[in-house]
Length: 248
Image: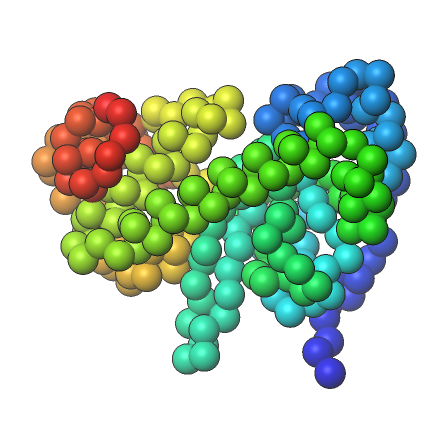
């Protein structure tokens, strides 16, 4: 039998829904964008909020899928444990992202907070019932699923690159574009995750990640004004290094 930390089993806290939805900065980015103001109450009725601290687990790989979530602030990392004991980080979720799209009866990955994070939580059965009665909501979730699949393909291409510096360049560019799509500055990039997280995402060692950042800096493609801040100085050259087909 699989056992889970008590923190994973604690009930979600009830939210003052109207106040939260009225002041939500990511509503137009999230699944909520499908519903007009007069219908948002249907979503509020099944919503609870969760706040988790850095390093705290929201769900665990292999646990029954009972809730789906919209991240409203902070950042989450999705990871899996490899057979040899290593950790593979599959993705980082940004405000507006929806957690649980591709999962079926169990969670496919562990979700942990990179920074203090707030989420809207929905029981799976309640969300499925609402989707069945709302075609705009259903279409919105399908749209989010398609985007998630596109980003997963881009991530696979990034991981398939041979040179570590290509992987790091690709990571910075793809993250920059995602941040812009989520209404956040794409340059300079605020890297909330650690170098260890980046290494576990790219399949590299932390030393190799650090050397790759240094190489890109010495080439004049980026500057590092702070440990967790990256400024892209020459986007076209960075795209050339990464070999990505995206606009400069």
